[in-house]
Length: 117
Image (cartoon, rainbow, N blue to C red):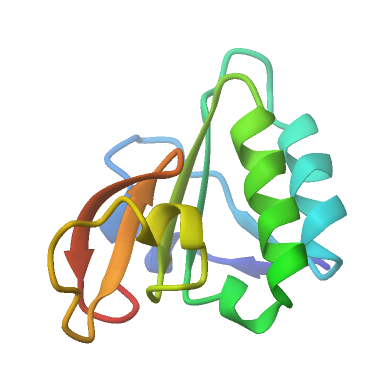
């Protein structure tokens, strides 16, 4: 709800001369994310990334979130969650996870990483 992160914090994440300030928002993740995606400027590609966040939701709400992300056109969903947070992703991993998190893109595992990336 209006906190802004300044350019100094963004220097490591952008190579553009133009920096857009990030706005932190509070709300229900199941309704706020689709709303925010709908506010993206025309012609931009939206990437939704989260790291060790969905573990705090009950399993049925996690699945609702995943279903929403997978149903959105022209949005890339990048998740970094512990094994079991999304069973349908965990079931696709054929390597021992060994305490790592599963990095997934659009519901498909892309790698195993340390907690929080």
